[in-house]
Length: 226
Length: 218
Image (cartoon, rainbow over all chains, first blue to last red; front, side, top):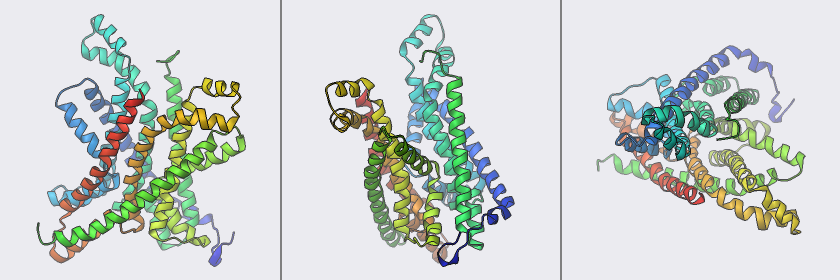
């Protein structure tokens, strides 16, 4: 395949850099995995505290969610990496990588889970309270099992975004997949092959994640709906 | 205000103007193009749906950074070179319109089937059914997620800094570098803190609006 300026398509180029790209992919998967797991923990716990209307915690969580949802992730990453050292907190690129994803994804998941928990029919909670369940037990045994199922589709969206946004770490030169690809390309100008290759990898992983989530949804669906 | 702040503010404010322009262009084009694509997704024709679906899945699925690099570094290889602003706008519009298309499709399909059936029974042809019965009802459901997407799009404009557009983030980053060279102090906390504050002030009212619209639906 010949393009303008005599550019020749050479798929072998990507394969000759498979080792470096594999390492980049591993780093992408590492910060994404920590980011997704952390965002899930933050989302469920703070979402529960909000839905249970725990005073003070609820207002503080609100503030956290609004700040992180209404500012760009990229600027948050810049702040953590370039501004915090001035305040005496020096974090490595890897730490900023997963931490920024946890904080950002967590803020979205708090909203997702809170909305899910609050969408559980009040009648169920009232019935369990009338049967003598204490508040926490009613939450753990009634609201949680129903609420997470309601929240699942939007939580999946957030988790997929966390994975895709691991590519933002290029801004702090953390050598994940995209940064690795850019570095290779800047030395050996085979941009076409490289970007098609990493594009396919990202798309495949995004589709795999959403398909996995959909099968979880089906597996845990309550017969007859909620 | 300290002496360094004046020139930095002016420089960053110019960057902010670029950011706002980029956001405005991206929002308008994404909404128009996305609505058209979303309407195509509800067509009865299967080949049309498959082509549009593939387009939507690709640009929604790729990280925007990868899309931006693709447009900025790869397209020049086949003779399609763009400046940073146009490249960023194209990337954001591809992502934005794909998401708007999904929102529009979801809203149209959330209108109960009986509505279309009843309109058909009354003798409305397909275009009339869409225009007079389905779209007016779908429009109310489109609004809350659409405003949410606008917030997202405004925030994603900051990615243009990565391909070198002199937007609000790039301007503040260069200011920090310049201050570090000239005075040895970065002043990164107040500068980047202000950038966060600017985005917050723009996005929070829109987020609140989206939530209000959402609540009014129920």
